[in-house]
Amino acid sequence: MDGPVRGVKTHKLMKKIEAIIKPFKLEEVKDALSEIGIEGMTVTEVKGFGRQKGHTEIYRGSEYTVDFLPKIKIELVLGDAQADAAVAAIIKSAKTGKIGDGKVFVYAIEQAVRIRTEEKGESAV
Image (tube, rainbow, N blue to C red; front, side, top):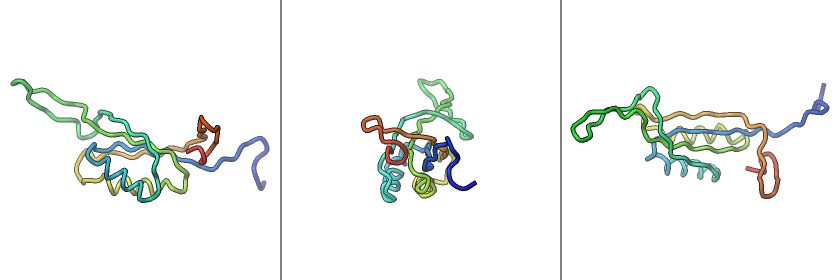
C-alpha cells in the first residue's frame, strides 16, 4: 500500500535529546550546539551518580560519602535530521575522557505544540 494509511496522521519525526554533563562543560556544549544552528534548550541543575559512585569528604573532622554529584541536564527537541549532529556536538564538547563525563539519551517525540500560536510539529520547536 502506497501513501499514508487511512485515519493515521503522518508527522515529521522529531527527537528529544537529553544530556547529563559536568557543570563546567555547559558553555562549551551550548557554543557547540549554537555553531550547528541549535539555539533552544532547557537546562536544569541536577544531582546524580553512575559508575563513578561519588566520593568521600571530611567535614568538621568526620568522613562522609557524597553520593550525589552536581550535574547539568540539557534537554532539546529538534527535527530528526538535526539529531545526529546535535549528539555528536554534545559528545565532542562535553568529553573530558574522565569518569563522570555523563550520558546522552535520544527519544522519539510524537508531537510538539507551541502554546502561544498552536503550531504543531517541528515548527513548534
